[in-house]
Length: 521
Image 1 (cartoon, rainbow, N blue to C red):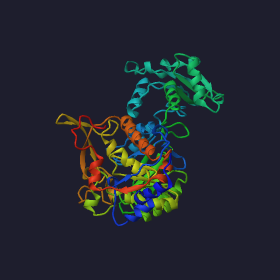
Image 2: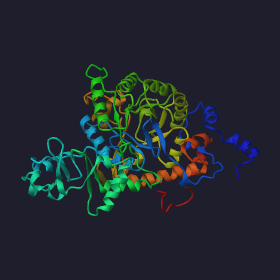
Image 3: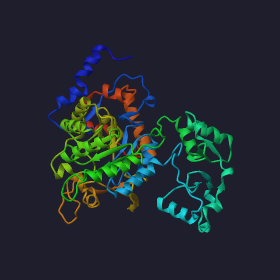
Image 4: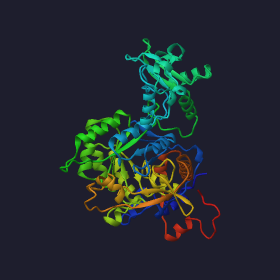
């Protein structure tokens, strides 16, 4: 039964809502371990909780977790893994612009229902040319539709003939001819193309490709059985992959407020690059710097909003209500909150600025409510309980260190003392700034000039896959919601009640007075 009115009044004297609690501690900066959440009467089982969140129109995630735009955390492999689990990856910009475009393309083309623009071969092409294309583009497939100059289907080049021994043969000599290729007219696809393709593959054992043509036999798309099976299975999963309207995985990309040699915002370069990202289907662009409440970031967000009215834009980082209002007025849909909380960030030590994360989240969340924009808690999260606390104030979290040890993160594995590690570095570290991220911290990328690093280079012990790490995080989030009787993230924010924790209380919360045989992870 729910608590009586008397006991509820008693509780409210100790366990306070976010407004009452944080305003009472307005004179002190608080972070995750400084507080704990009070439990409430619940009829909600953790497995029944819903974790979906909308960060902007057209940007909906099935779990509120984003991987950070750091060069030792998120490239295409990480972004693919995040999206397949219902989250989002932000591909970093510490690479050549053309390479970032390729990384986005790898995510967006990873698994489709209908591949609307399949890579094609032409009859006069040599198989050796096809092999070079596969190597250059790092394709993971070797079967290609063959079309003539007008796009009319001529046949299918099967993977078993795309080999070096046939390199000097023309595609026309090795293709499966048109009359032997299974096709469907695009008019027959109906409202559920996946279901139509699924029935076709069931009715035609041994066929793994279905090409889509029009009345003139011009190629308009391609289904593969493996893609269709995967999407069909996803429909029965609790946390479905995050996909766009065309069944492509969601993907975000970070950009910088790039300046030219005269110190002015390089507007043409930024617009051209973001235009390229948009052409490849990027779902959100994050204007990412250490100090988001600044003229350069504001000008960049305004420029992108004017040029791409419907493109979701994240911006940051800030730790003040004024910063949130500024970026929202410039056109940002979501604002990244956090300056200095990351495990490899030294901004507060080097620059003497930054706010402990929960206090910053509270102040920013109240400004965001007025401006109707989302906030993302960026940094400082080391365990699932931190995410639960962050989600009482923000719509989603951005994590770096938690994912840095995963095999999907960029970087080589090294062995030290019998243990395996991966490199993890702050984007404000000297090494990262030398490779291009100096603009994020307001410095020149010229290595001959003195800079003030605001991050360190470190090692993270190799962990399990992103699937495994996210499964543990999601389980923890759902448990926290169950304890508060919150069926969804909106209810979590409404119901949360806080109390300050003493140092002794912090020690009590962790395992103590025992010799651990097995860790919780």
